[in-house]
Image 1 (spheres, rainbow, N blue to C red):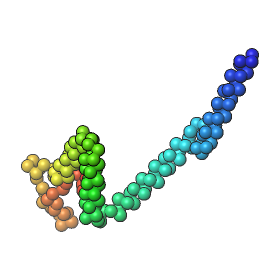
Image 2: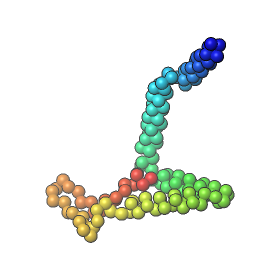
Image 3: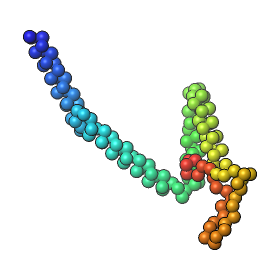
Length: 137
């Protein structure tokens, strides 16, 4: 009987310590509040990222300079560490795929070709990209 009482005390201690742990996180033992807080933080960070993207949209020169600086820093890091060649190769292939999508037309001009506008409110768009510029970034 002593062993059973000791086990029950250990179980209650473990439960209370877990409850304290979850309370320290600001949630209940089920973790619902923790998940809700994580989702709220993720949404807030997503909004901040979108604001930065919206502010950078009309500044293509600054975006290109930032890209060049990040690439230079990455290549210096790869050179100094003498590693990450496979990762760099994979990133290069991925970026090449994005570039091909960016410079390719959305429709095949040999089969469909660009259509001329038939009404006065339509606009003639001879080249529509398969991958828009901002998604390419």
